[in-house]
Length: 75
Length: 366
Image 1 (tube, rainbow over the protein chains, first blue to last red):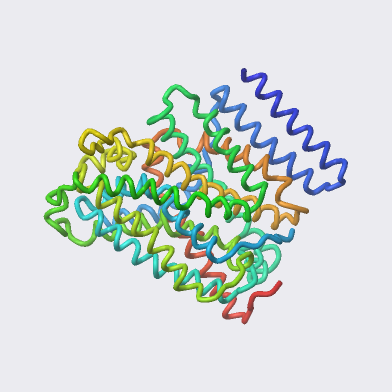
Image 2 (cartoon, rainbow over the protein chains, first blue to last red):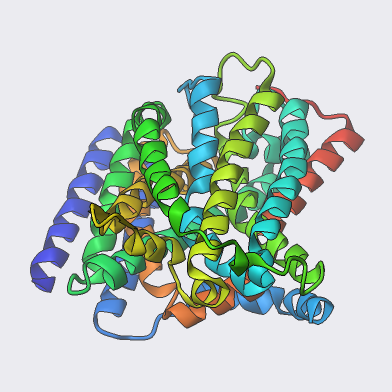
């Protein structure tokens, strides 16, 4: 089932790239391919239970000093 | 990229109502009860009051730049490259928010209604409808809002009216027992969930909205209507279930709907709330997603945002699978980080743009 879904998504991506290639929208084509590649990579890693860095951990790290201060204020 | 779509002020007001109700209708009572105990409903009222002040601030920013969207404002005020960078960060905010909202609805469906369906499949299914809506454009989403709004209101009113006989006022007594601090804390958190994300509507308003006469009173009334729904559901869940059950449940509104029993005639009405929630969250997710896609397309100067809508939908699904590894992680992250994340893009970002714009004497163009 996974292989079928993955192949279908790849074909879908390929059709989109072909269409953008024929219209000559190069910038759109590059962004389209990059976003699709990132999405497919994350989904594949998730499917095979390979840990993917969570963006929310990075955001938490950035805001850590502020959230600690806030917790102290309301504790 | 030029967005040539137009929506009416009435449609925009309906968007505000559904976007504000969005996830709050099902999640706010639990978080408010956890913060403020039996004063959760007072916390909800305070949250609406704080929200009105922030809404006036949003309105003043929109008046300062009457013909621009958020990316235009960024580029005009901060310059081309810094403006693009700030807008890109905003696109990340919208995308991550969309992914978290998608996880919330997927988690709700898996835990409450369809426990044997894989979460990934539900996410694809839900995101498919959102991607299709965004591909058709904001005009179509707004017309859908107009169609579904009466159904959503009716479904919610059914739950509200039939819950009234089960209300026990003693659940909210004594009032102000824990002091004002927990009420304020709950109100601040609720504002960050229900109002601050409205910043994504700056991709729609004021640029795409026609007939902008008497905007502020109309928008305030819309927000008050949405706020009334949230205050009412908080009051009902606390008075029907009690503080402890409300605070310990992930979806207390759903539990209230489950417990409805009108003379043995009307029972098991929980799917009523599930349907209304699916509809409101569809619009909230659509607007987050629309903002992330249009911001990215405008920043990168693409021909049209529609070319990247499908892969961005895939990316949202991919992110929704990894953002929250568990409900505990979601609760902890929301309590510790979400407030600051939302404040950065909901208050600090527009405030900086407004202040710098005023200092440099920049007014909206394009």
